[in-house]
Length: 548
Image (tube, rainbow, N blue to C red):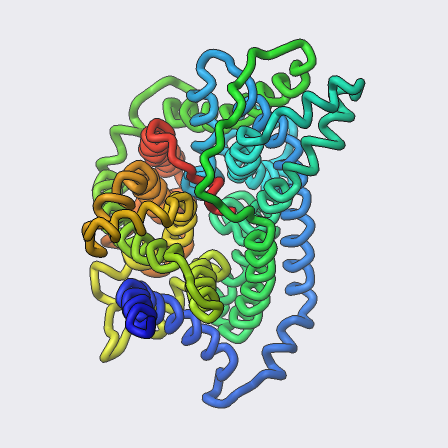
């Protein structure tokens, strides 16, 4: 017995050693280094100064704007996402999978692209609404970006509900609303609350959307950290906001983990989708409106990229992608940035999937003791921490802590891929863990009883189950890495900037050609990520449902 326990402990250490080491060097060290400089600005502890930061009137305004805008955006996301989740997961109609994939694409679009698309929509076809640069524009962008979370998370739960209790309630005379309120809603409540907590988290930590649509007038905690570190060099203020953000996000992750149902190995046969009825018309209309809401900024972006300053149709913006823009706005052309972004995203995907597999295998092995269960739970929570730390904090932390021996990575070509891999890692883990948890442990025991060793059991039992989820996780990680902007904006230099950074720089340079190039580059980046997510949807692996 003691030998078996020792073997399990050694296996756990072997699996977790590499990802824990990577996380310690490239996440814990940079974040603590960045925060430590804020708490020790003159080489000694200054906790009073950090607390004084939270008393600043601007910080109060930033915190209040972050809270109320995230709350409103989360509420609107639920209002639009719940009917769409029902239509796309419980009703059968032509092109259902294509519509579902189309509504998933916004979540993986680069945040800079989302901001540019909404600016083009609000300064073009909807200019008469005078919403550009307002909180309404920011909230619209946040809803656009996060509605896929509700659709996939709640839709997956809705799809697997046992339909017999609802049918029994209807047979007893309950109307459709009464059935939903008394039977369906209680069953969906954990998924809804979990999705809402994750949406609020993503809204509160949004960076590119708020920075592009709000500028400095309407700042969230995330963009305020960016302003304090880059423009004002106020590391103490940035550290205080980073700690506050980490505490709030940790609380939200704990809520999501507590509400997340524990996967089992029991095979469940979900009810088959049925044909729409007249009673489904309100939900269908909301879904159609949501589809139009998602399509409008993307269509405006495409149309804007095909017109010049005088409104004439042209391909000049796309031909200019091979130039440096007007007034030498760029150091390298957009085409070079796209090639670099693709190569970096491939490297980041390989890193995140490899680390994610090791983490998933570590935390899903059967725990035989309470202490072992706690260790595996702690590891699972540890690798969710990158979700709770500002990408801005992570990027700036790389610069201040990994720029001198023995960890001098400042000039390393792996610095940006590692940062992007850490951003994608929690989503990869949450994609792979449910698939591994769904494997009946008796299959592993049966393979062991037949003489299969650990490697043989992995190949025979796990690999067939993990093949499609790994492909989906890789596609998801690639799309997220391709559009990552927060950490990369600190790490990418002018001569090797990624495409999201180049787009942001083009927006900041005057001239119609530079803006047209930004629109064209945004279309190229959006098309690339959309193509990746359409492939992901084809493999039908659980993506966002696993995040909760």
